[in-house]
Every structure is written in structure tokens, then in C-alpha cells.
Image 1 (tube, rainbow, N blue to C red):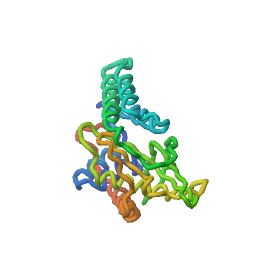
Image 2 (image 1 turned 60 degrees about the horizontal axis):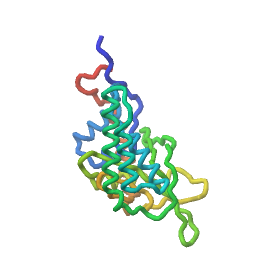
Image 3 (image 1 turned 30 degrees about the vertical axis):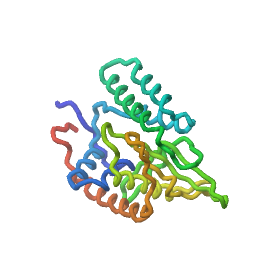
Image 4 (image 1 turned 180 degrees about the vertical axis):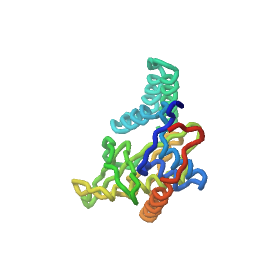
Amino acid sequence: MDKKTHVVVNEPEISVRYLADYMAASERRRRTIVEGCKYRPLARLLQHKEARISIARAIHKGEATPQAMKERADNIRAKMTTDDFDALTNEANADYVQRFSEVVAGIELPVAEILRGRAFPVIKIHKVKVTFSPNLLLRRLTKTNKLKRGALMLRYAKGKPLDVVVGAFQSAAIFGLLREFDDEDGAEPEKGLCITLDAHSGTWHPAPGASVSMFANMKAACQSIGERWPNVPPPDGAAL
């Protein structure tokens, strides 16, 4: 019997990140994105979780300086490992933080209170589960004492900046999803506080003016994803 390589996700599910990628992708790439969401590899995959946590924590504490980030990258790279995969993971996370250390000096985020991020409840859009876990939350008080809120999500790809269209869609999704969740303090989402931060280039992408219509298009895309989900074939050679 062949060793299992993938697990099937029977109910349609996609993260905000991949939904943004989907919106800016070619039809061929869209099929690949949905395939990857439906068929999850069982093999260990390189993750940037430690890098995202390190950067978010530094921004939250006001300690995101070039030197502090470089030291954090060196510490991750020097961590003890038990196998080659752990070593590769440490190297990937160190590269992420190292790159951020090279661009952080030029980043000026909006003036706002910066809070720790959290996972929001899964929301269903046209029967598709959409997961939303911003790395940081933002809040500010206007001159007229109105409370505004937003969220920041990190993106990174080694050697290349984030596509501006992807960044715009991801920030539009942040704005759209925050509007779906009531805030106990009555704070309203603000486009300028809904941010996708590219850790490679240091560019941050605020939710654009057309965010409401863009999010409506993303909702429509969820319907298409849900409809195609049952008929998406597994990757070549997959053992389920």
C-alpha cells in the first residue's frame, strides 16, 4: 500500500492570504491554489511562523530596529536542531527576519496603538470557510473621539516584493472582514489601518478606496471556489 501523501479537506476552506493570491492569479494558478487548499500535504513543510512572531512582537513592543532584527535573525540561525529539516526551517526564518532588518528603518506605519494579533472566528462566505489571523491589531482615536481599528498582516517571499495587486486585495479583505465582526468598544474599521506589510521590500499596502467593491468580488470568488471544490482533482502522484 502506498504511503499517504495528502489529506483531503472536504469542506471548502481558504485563508485570507490565499484568497488574495487567488484574486490576482491567472486561471491556471487559481486551480493550483484551490488544489493546495483542498489537498494538504502530510509531509513537513517549511514554515515562517517564527519569523512572523518575531517581527510582530518587535513591532508591538516598539523594538523593530535594524540591529534588534539582525540579532534576532542571528539567534534563529544559531538555534540547535535535531535534523536537516529543522536546520532548513531555521535558515528560512532567519532569512525572513534578516531581510526585514534591512528595510525596517524605512517603514513608517500609521500612528496608532499596536496590539497583539489574534485568530478571528472562521467566517463562511458562500459556504467557504475563510480563515483570518492578523499578526497585529491597530487602534486609534480620532480628533472627534471616534475609535477606529484595523489589522496588519505580514507577507514575505524570498527575493521578490509582494505584487501590489495581491497586497491591495489582502488589505481589502482585512477591511471587509473586520466589518463583519462587531467591536466591543464600538470601533469602526478604517482603510488606512488595514495593512499588508511586505517584509521583503518594507512596503505596506493599505486597504484601497475601492475596498468594499473588491471585497464583494472576493465574496463572489468564494462562491466559485465552493462550486469547483468537489471537482478539483488531487495532485499528480498523490496518495490519499
